[in-house]
Amino acid sequence: MKVATKSGRVLPDAGAPALPEVRAYGPAVVRADPLPDTGVGGARAAGELGLTRTEFARAVQLGIVRAGPPAPGGGAARYTRAELDRIRSADGFPGALRERVETVTGAEAAGGVLGISPGRFTRLARCGHITPVGYRINRYRMVVWLYLAAELREFAAREAGMLRGSAPPADRELMGAKADLRPRKWRGRHVGLLLRRTADPWERAAVLASLLPEDELREVVPDQAERIVLAALAPPPPYGHPQIPAAAAVALRLLRAEPPDEIHWYRTSLDFALTGARGQSKSTGERGPT
Image 1 (cartoon, rainbow, N blue to C red):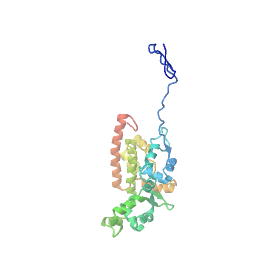
Image 2: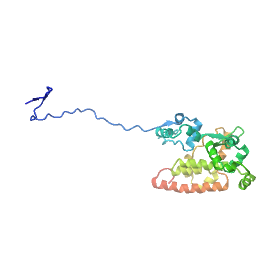
Image 3: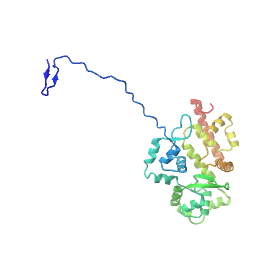
Image 4: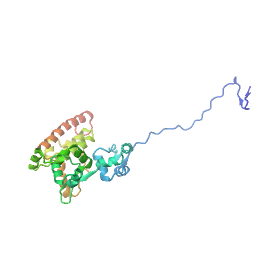
């Protein structure tokens, strides 16, 4: 028996057997995992952040922009979309970012930021009060130091008394001895930035090893196999390192520890780092002699 509704639709009798449910079957829908964020190259990343190539290199050096994981086949560093989005979302972008990486070259320009003479600025820098962020070798094969403009402004606000008056006794003693702490201060900064970018024990050891003269390194690391590993993992020269052989030879001296106490510090640090690296190799069998 069938029942007609007011609309004229005919329904099956409630007492009739239920009709089987009809389902449509088709190919299974496979949800693909999201594609990995392989990132973009440095040139494109710089453009998207509104930075010049030099400004972008400085941002990477300072750890402001973090490179993504290395590609399986190696090659140039890449920068993930997530990292670029993080930087773009920061307050004051892009002006604040460019201020953080702005540099000035030489004592005259740096002194101008502080409102002091080039001579006074040179004294402050040579005595270790201001740390360079980079270097250039000019056509006369002289080292020209670079400074972060933001740090100079911070120094002026923090140490206004050092911008006026006579030099303190400690500075006069250093100048009398013709001391120049700029190379050492820069090396300390450079090494610190490199160590912050890796947690791998062998890579950290390689950073420290790169600062030692060859004869000192052989004493600390007598095993040739370990020295080969450290050389393979050594960081490249910093951005702006000259390619012309004569200028590169001058710059190379900046990359090596020189005063005996500085050499001793890096030797001790390397010996400690190698203890951890060797322990990792014994436990995991990864990277480096066992």
